Image (cartoon, rainbow, N blue to C red; front, top):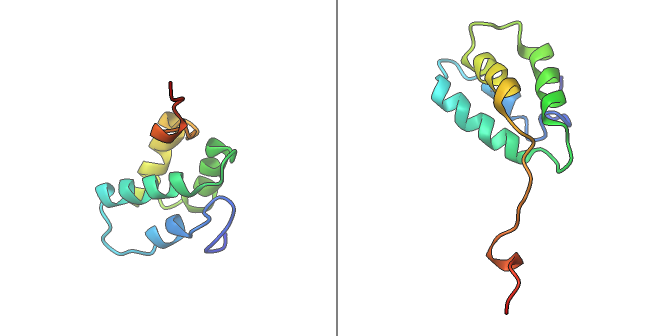
Length: 89
């Protein structure tokens, strides 16, 4: 997998696996940024499966744990609007 791909548009996961001594909380922060950087409509679970196929062989890396947890718990993010989307009376 390249540093930048549709499954890792900013190369965050790629870089996380190259940070020596990275901790699980740091991986969770990177994971959140990764999830928010996916293009709208992208299948999050398919992207996670693809990333695990590439990087998952490093079972000792904390990002592998975070990606695996994400595969079981993450929902595809959807924008739900904010204060600007509310109708005014």
